[in-house]
Picture 1 (cartoon, rainbow, N blue to C red):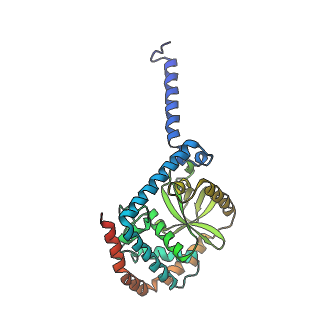
Picture 2: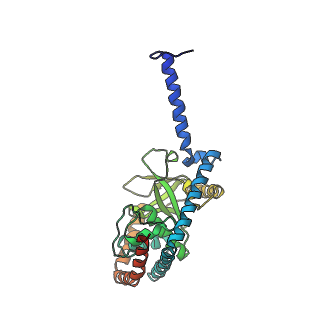
Picture 3: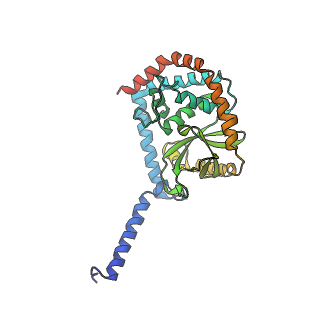
Length: 298
């Protein structure tokens, strides 16, 4: 039977074709949707595994080419950690704000300068290394924060997320941002070093709300990136989700208290130690320049 154009039957046929095309197209992108891969979709998990292996291969290639530079970076992280221990900081937020301050003021860069921009001077093995060259975005800031906190033996984690517009369903979107997770007074918070150390609390295991008396902003947790980057597996993520559900039921800090009783005093304290920070910069200048030079070499 043939279908003539400009008839109701033809119009319905076209609609069905477009519907099938749309369904097929969406299926190709479902690997990053939490209600798909967390339910064990074979196709989605195969895609994630392929992407994971690609990342591992790239990191192995980087190690062969940049081993010396990576080891120098690790040495620098130890230097930063030792310096932070001398600043009389009390808790995870204090240390995080201090790390952010050192980054923003350029003390961790070779030329005492830092610009919050995307940069090609980075490594999959050590995203934080770009900070030393004087540039970086959210993944670079959160990564050097993670490396320093790990050296300090202060628990932290990178949280891959999607920055949501209001009422947007983040589970249907890819990750487009990275923040840091820290624990303060028994509650887990997300802190965004890229955007003025904004603090977030878990509203649900998959959604974080900005702690603010002025702005409204929401992030959606995108754990599929942990699989791709070989940081977690499916079972670990499921355990994390259960833990985050408990975190979402805890009280969180008042935004005014965070600003007035934590951020302002720490910044004021750090401002008084600029001489020590400049001395640290000069002490590590040769090491930083060697790392930056290594990033230029092919």
